[in-house]
Structures are given as structure tokens and as C-alpha cells.
Length: 349
Image (cartoon, rainbow, N blue to C red):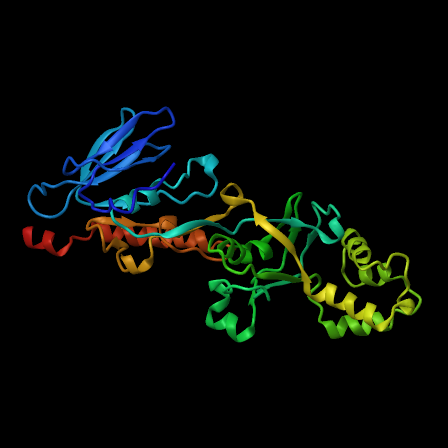
């Protein structure tokens, strides 16, 4: 389904919602024709031209036999587009854009990445729990992702994941460490920016620590030393094959081979190419910018009497419950803001 056209931004315009069955429910405050956009839930909102006693009033038309609801205040908390199987299809984003808000284009955030595993092995189901992962600018032409131009990332030259667990999937990579950085990769793809490099230290041990262990390996096989210090057996086999060190003992490695092995253990570049989209995304990024919202009450600065909460706002947090927290906090603020009399209502009371 398409979003509302850019020349149809007035809240006094008509908007129609098309259901999956092709039925339409329209909203009008002035009788003008507007654009069409899909909505599985068949909900639409429009402004009424008659305020009936002061203040803006809004009309909600619900598809099917849901009828119409008229109110001076609305709270829109329809979610984003993550987990579409439960009905989240971006209805709130389309309604708000159709009524005049300018959105940061939505995108799937905290979603698994698609890409080949080391040596093209199939490592699905393998988990690593002590990894360190980060994103860094690539050397290819083009602007680096916006997330890597933030002060902290620019100072350190990288953006580090706050989590340490990684899961190999049938299609690529997931787990908290990957999800925490996936938005950097996804936003670069959507904005045609230079794709970032995603690197991982498989065990969290420093290059110096690995160098010391490898030098002291003696006649032990490379595979034995790697597994001894925390690299899982299947991953060990893949790393050794990628470096062509099968059947080799530590004492047989040249300095350059040992350096390459340390680099692969402590800064392996994940070969990602795409992502698994909204179907697997934990949350939706993008939406109404906070600059268009009174954050004390969550009331829209564009649409008087309309309050926003949750994923319709351009807010998302790292994995670990922060997005639930935002939903609850913004929902509470919107609820308190909506029941509080506005200045004009106080004068009319």
C-alpha cells in the first residue's frame, strides 16, 4: 500500500482506508478528495471543521460496522510494522503522515542480518556468549552511516554493541549483540550510505592474550588451542578452513599466519548483505520526530488534541527491555496529557 501523497498534508482533507477485502472507509472534514492508503485495521482519522463549542474535535471512522467516534482528544498508539502477523501494518504512521506530520522514514530495527558464515560453513544454532561486536566505517566511497558520525562513535572510531551474545542462524546472524547494531547496517542500506563493517571478537580476549597463547601452543594442534580458550568446535573448524590451517600445529605456523589468526579471532568481519525485515524485527525505527511532539504531554505540535505513544514516534532503544519501557512511559505520559485540560478548555470551563 502507498502512503499519502506529499501535496495532501492538510488535516482538513479526506483520507480513505482500504481493507484487505477492498472495502473503503473515508474520513472528511471539508469534503475534499484525498489519497488512498491501505490499512488492515480499517481505521482512519480526520479533523472536523465544526468545533462545536471551542477547540479542535476529531472524527474516527472504523471499518466494517465499527461506526464513528468523535472526540476532542485522541491517543494514537498503533505500534509500528514489526511482527506483522499480529496486525502491525503501519496504520498509525500512514494516518499521521496523511494528517500533516513529516515522518522519519520507518525501518526495521533490532532485526537479524543475512550473510554467509565463516568459510561458508552452515553454523546455524551455534551460540557464542562472550563476544565483543562493533560497527566501523568502511573504506568504500560514500558517506558513513549517520550512527557512526555521532560524537561517541567518531571519537572511538567505532560503535560498540552493548550486548555479548551472538547466534548463528540459517540465514546469517542474530542474538543481542547483532540486533543491537543491526540498525546501523539497515539505515545505511536504506539511505544509500557506505555500508559499515561489522566486526566481532569471538571470545572477548585481547589480541595480546591470543598472541601469547598461540606462541606457547607448541606442538598442540591449532584447533586444540582455539577450543581450549573458548572458541566453539564448529566455529573453530570454519576459522581454520578459511585460513587454510587444517591439520596444522602451532609450532608450524609462520608469523604472518599467526597474525592472520589473531586478527580473525579478535576482529572478524561479518559478511552481511541484507536483513530479515519487519517479520523478525523487535521494533520499528523512524516515525514522528520528537521535535514535532510536546514530550511533557506527548501531544502533537501539528495536530492539537492528538497524543502519540510507542512506536509511532521516532524512538527505539537497544535490546534489553528498553523499548517496552518507552512504550509504557510514553503511554503514561500521553494518558496523563490527554486527561489534563488544555488552556482553552480551562477558559471554557
